Image (cartoon, rainbow, N blue to C red; front, side, top):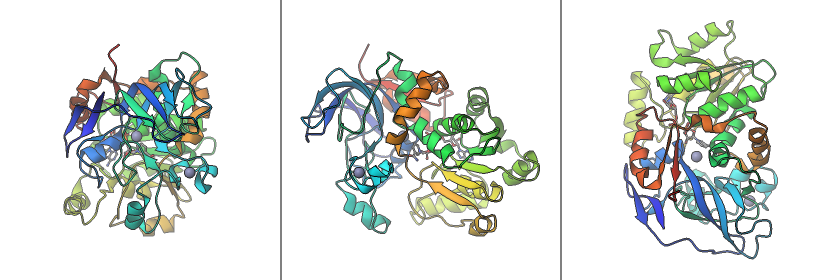
Length: 395
Ligand SMILES: NC(=O)c1ccc[n+]([C@@H]2O[C@H](COP(=O)([O-])OP(=O)(O)OC[C@H]3O[C@@H](n4cnc5c(N)ncnc54)[C@H](O)[C@@H]3O)[C@@H](O)[C@H]2O)c1
Ligand SMILES: [Zn+2]
Ligand SMILES: [Zn+2]
């Protein structure tokens, strides 16, 4: 079959590889009908995720039709149409039972390596996301093996288009969890850094959860336009501001600052100024793995007693962390990989009820053969690119 494979920094290729096979009784094989490139795929693409190996199959946002199931999968059958959550979770461990699916204790066969790097704790395995996260083949391919298929995939019974439900696999739940973590009260103001796919769903989710106003921050006009037109946010281009963003936001909110802030940017934040230069040197020399411009701004800008919600990915240590500001304002921090399973059904219901149309953020739909070029376009934010959907099978 064809699959998008990592071959080094900035080097994705479409390879011919063997079709996946059932390995365990609880596996399913999915014929992938649609798959997407995520902002998280840019981290291995940019060489920021350790333990990638040449030939690793990418992709964790995919859906399709069940081709085959193992004897342990009773709830799915050949021909069922499913969306697949990006975290691989057993459904039985302490964390899965607590709805903390991304923290599953059983699904990462290389847990030891991750434990060694993080002080003794592993997380769930992830599709197409390095050997530290299990070395699972991803879903940017014609077919994918889905472990624990009896608890992961959600059946889509209606004939709703792939494009409307594909983002249940990651970015819609991720934006939703980010907003939910804020504990929004009716009328609250939420500021969102980053108007990429995750930020755009965080904005829409904040409104779904009762926010009165969302202020969105980025520098790309087409993304800001989408935040305004699709999300209904007030938008700020941070490159056009004369004052530090925390002061601008304070002015916009009657002197109180936003009630909550969301960092939908993560470890590869764009920045200016001395801190950014220092971050870049430290990241290059691997002294510090994350560039935290957006996170620092979030903390400085958040109103007193507010929540800093962090869906953006961080993987290491951060210097110049404004701990004094966080402490002084009594902030709450919430973060982490999304517990996608928890959100699949409720968010599918919202989509089917017409409360949100996730397909509005798609800018590019292409055959999988064009994936290498689309990785570049998406990374460089060229051609108005916000979200890329890949079609593995010619229609
Ligand atoms: N927690 C999870 O489970 C989860 C799931 C999916 C994605 N993510 C992460 O969410 C983050 C965003 O993903 P995405 O797909 O939207 O990526 P993306 O790269 O398309 O979007 C990031 C956006 O942030 C903007 N940005 C960069 N620096 C900024 C700054 N200093 N201030 C404001 N905006 C800035 C960029 O211009 C861009 O529009 C990534 O770190 C990704 O890995 C996390
Ligand atoms: Zn993702
Ligand atoms: Zn588990």
